[in-house]
Image (tube, rainbow, N blue to C red; front, top):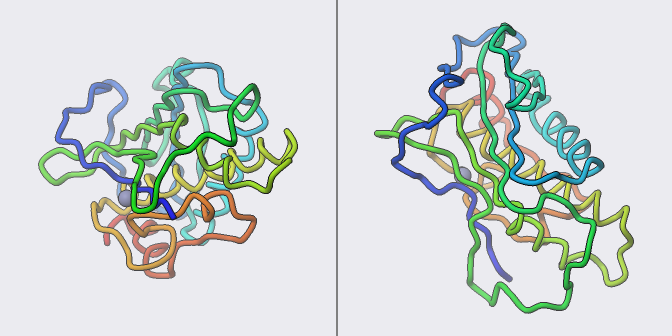
Length: 211
Ligand SMILES: [Zn+2]
């Protein structure tokens, strides 16, 4: 079963210095502005499902999210913290996509997303590789319809985004042994209708901003 690896640590400087802002001291609830930047027009249904999935996964941490587009940022909204999510590739389930194509032989891993790390410090900037995430659709039951594909892509994107937000909000490059903060997950798990969640310890780390 192909495993996917979610965090690639890149020692690169954050290019969006205008938006970069260190997460503020924990408040209750922490309101985080999540600024999205899509390389190409995403599937609207999948994006909405992604947002709900992330919110549901972060709910136990008491973090509230405000979703915005980078192009709509005017820098005049008071948030406890800012995160920038760059979505690369095609973030939509619609359109022709071979579900019979071979990929991901046993033991292979694909990077689905990465978060910038500079000198050990996690920066609030993640990139999501939608073309890689979309491969999870091949793990749906044969004949899955458009709606199911849109749901599955949204849920998979949400789980990938929540994993990266864990790194940013908990301020850690560490992975957990179980739960959504594990370093790798199977494609089956990403689109599964079973709930994935953070462990209580990881949820607490997200709440307090320190693991
Ligand atoms: Zn990770």
